[in-house]
Length: 475
Image (cartoon, rainbow, N blue to C red; front, side, top):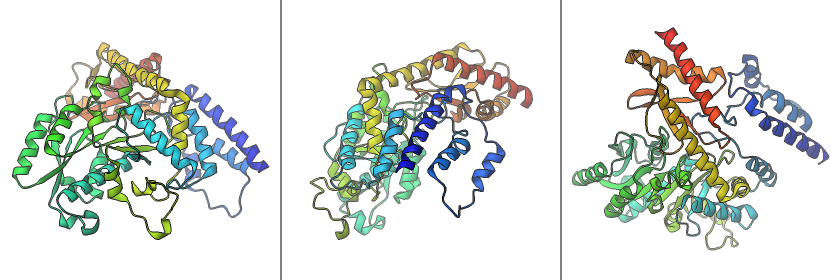
């Protein structure tokens, strides 16, 4: 193991230098074509190489070409900088390399603890067994909607696991135009069909309208359909908008529908006292999807699904053949009885390390800093005559566009559509685009607690300067 020891120390030094130097590097740059071709064309080696050489090649061929999300001026999509504690824990978890499906070993018990911690951070009730870690919120959503489908089927007297979907009448779920695409994917994969997800009207800010929801449910029941699900957002990806969860929960309680809340990105915003009121009713959901690998900075991959009733979750997924029977599993059984994965990676150690390194107070402080910086960015945008704020800042996403006066709308659309990539290629900051109310826009997502006001100033300057160049070239 001496080679491993030497290479391990070299790896830590390499990664410490990499992480420590990110702020001085371009946020992102297109890969050198020769470097890209080298990676694409790597031949299968006939003979193995030593660990020291592998570490050296990682340093020369991989680390120089990052996505950019570790940089404090990366505002794209919802991709976090990795927490150093989580990076170290990932190495230790890989060294143990268990299957966290179940059994009596440290990773299983630690996962039960960190799932409870996540529930406590989000203010969600957590009876034992009421949740598990997943690869991400997309998988968490499949698990949650599968559980909702199973409950709806049983209420109709159908064992959908045995009889299949053919035994069910059309089940209807309700979403908004701002609902994340993973919900549609889940409905398609579960055989529900995207056509059975009914889009409910939103207000001008993108919040699902509870009154319109109630009216749509009544109309569908009258048409002979079977409503079973409502999906609400605790922070939409476009603007960070938080639905009126309390009012939606009232509708679901009256109509006996499963309420799933997509909190993948935004649910941890509840930790900021300034915006916590927006999350009232989050604790009333039947299921909640979250991504510790987003706002918490846990290294990818790590999502989480929480449910109100663990019995519903286990009823939907438990399958224990004789060759997987474990008399030491305890009353809760294996995690593989609560979701889709059988062999499961040791995700809980990096979650434990990331949360333990900061504590609740540190995490809440970081979340509050990010939301404050997002609001400040909104103020900077409003102060710039050439920029337009596209939505009120509710959590930590600021959506805006380049919109100087006197420019034709069609030209502004072309400029704003090209703007994100043009900003990215300049390398000083990174922002991504979207469409809001039918208009092209850029959106900055602030989930890196290292972001500062000077970083925001760079973003504003880059959008203005790049927008002006595009306007001149496209006009």
